[in-house]
Image 1 (tube, rainbow, N blue to C red):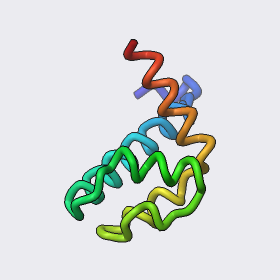
Image 2 (cartoon, rainbow, N blue to C red):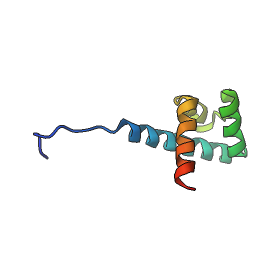
Image 3 (cartoon, one colour):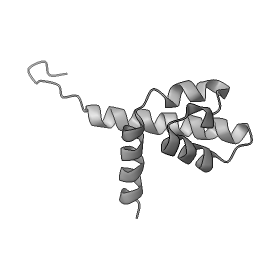
Length: 83
């Protein structure tokens, strides 16, 4: 490792990874509990009401760690990237 170089931290990548991990975990928790994950996540995004997300496996607490605007931004970025 070269200690003469300054390390750069990519916070945007870290945030994108965090959002991806949380959305995946929430999606799986909703599926396990028998909900339609897409409908429940959309309901949460539109209303801001965290009760759309199950508390199973910490999903509700995890999704509220991310601002809804950040969550929407990451979802739109990924959608556009994949069209």
